[in-house]
Image 1 (tube, rainbow, N blue to C red):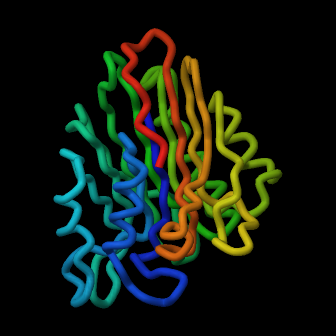
Image 2 (cartoon, rainbow, N blue to C red; image 1 turned 120 degrees about the vertical axis):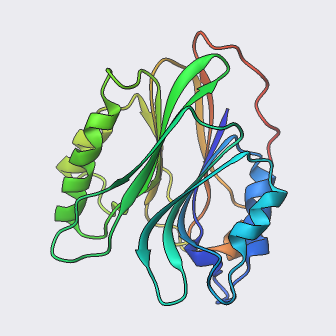
Length: 239
């Protein structure tokens, strides 16, 4: 299984140019089974057609979670899955003092004979609000709801030694720590993939292609993952 987390910055690249095609090509080249995207604009904007072009990618389930309304388009998170989920929840996260609305998409799927919970999110820039938001996500990680879980998204945690993020990550068995923002110089591990469950193989890496370095202001983050006691199929080829 390959997982991709990618803050696409509204398809606006480091050169200031808006190009859905570049983002789509980066996603296509990763050949990921599960894709969590942040800062996705809906296609009612005058010049954004990213959602329409998703039909060219091999995902049967495209789940959009609007978090706020901007002048020309809805704005939020997206989860792409190769197969339709068994259950989907879209939740609002706590918000202090009128900050930007944040949310999460939660999808329960079956993959190679196992039940998995996928949780895709984009947390707030403010520390106090992030603390509340991580606490609000904990019930969705409980053993009652899922033995195997994948969290992915932009957690906006600039200082990972803060107690609230360490306590939150203690609920997982593996978590990425690779720096993904800004593209150059790459200084902060804002984007994260975290895994909870019986893991037989887990490898994190960033996508460092020439295209990925210009398509957005974040580097795409990948996890190649195998579960114990699952019916395995080969991992997708490296891009």
